[in-house]
Length: 337
Ligand code: P6P
Image (tube, rainbow, N blue to C red; front, top):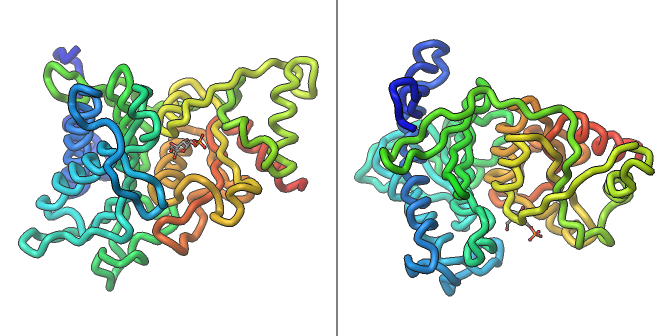
């Protein structure tokens, strides 16, 4: 509850700035504006069928995927929230082919915001947790922030990253490079309150997340790793494992950030030509930053995700992230071939 000892997102950001100087005024405004947009999205999502926003929008995105009405609405909410503040040079989104320019009548700033406005949207109509994922970059010298190339920076250059999961509670998880912290929305007051400081992902786990229906397409290292988990205590791992797959990356990653686990969307025979399933700039990179800042690990199976040098705005990559010892084991199996 919002009591005398509760720390709001605003107070946290100000105190972090005072103590560590990592969050200047423009970045603080950016984070607070995104958080406010997430509150608006949470209200729209929470209305469900009563809000007239379920179902298909009748349009498609650059991925060739049918857009849900809430995909488009969430994208518009984030654009409108961020255009006027003077903190951004440009915005890019899963739902837009190319970056969105700041309208001329608004001032521009030095940051870039790239986001998946509503990840997991196949779950919207069946009332399963979904979420917003965002990443903050600096606009490179000599670029306007409207070029695809301005956003094509490795994840190591991220200034901040976060997600907001719209589940039984609406929870914002954020890093600015100084730990990973969770803020839960107090709906009565309308504030995000600090509910988890310096989250730490356990290095070991008994829980894995992967879409098992793709098993016949997997590469050998992934098949070896999953076979060992499924073999349980009779197998080489000598212990039983449990599986969870929500089909919504934000929900699966939030579980892992909260209690550990390993999340895998590896490249396979089905996704080889596209480079993977999940998108690098607005899914894999922000989630990897968040996970690494919480003591976890995130690789493509062959390298740290945040060290991948992007060549396209909507580039896809394989994702293996979560409890460090499990991610390192899978990555080791890839090295062994
Ligand atoms: P599949 C949602 O569409 C998403 O991008 C991620 O949120 C999720 O982890 C993945 O795709 C689910 O993919 O193949 O299981 O439907």
